[in-house]
Image 1 (cartoon, helix red, strand yellow):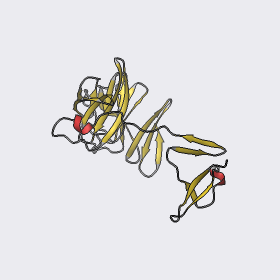
Image 2: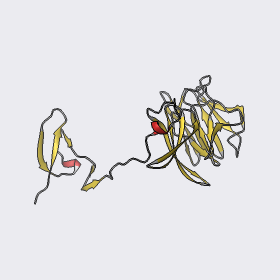
Image 3: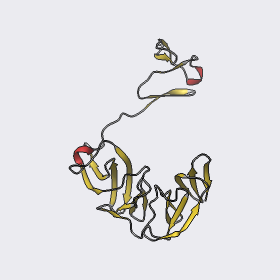
Image 4: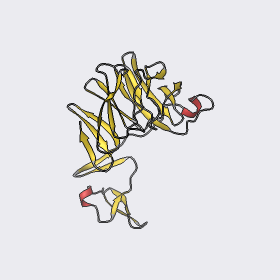
Length: 219
């Protein structure tokens, strides 16, 4: 028996029933009209697993009087004492998710614009405004990151150092912590790039610094 699926004309609302075809044989101007199925070139369809909630309502979990309209960041943290799933709300509350029915507000955090980074059992949480100093989470409480770190918007870990970049006063600067600790900072230990830093990504032997307009640079 021939199986059929539905195609939708991307230039209008017409649909028609056609045999299942690989993507490279689909009629021009059509696309798959499927839910939870992924078509592949030269092979059959693959089904995506369904979605389910991993936590209770974070707005109900967050401390009274704080905002939890949406999640600003989510990170799986492999602490030595045990793995944790951590979410940070738009109101700056750090929520530890234990199960679909259990979560705990661990305290006031920064509101990041990237996923926090883990270094030596310390989760470093930069603030997205470029003026607020980073915070840290050790698995049980949230506090200020020590050592007078710069208020970088972006963070990474590279060659046994924590990297912070793009403060409001030095948007093109990349700062390096002391070796072996995220809480020792010399604000003269930095490299300046040509343009404003927009993100960081660590590779085994280079640190990628994403910048406005010109892509990336290697440090």
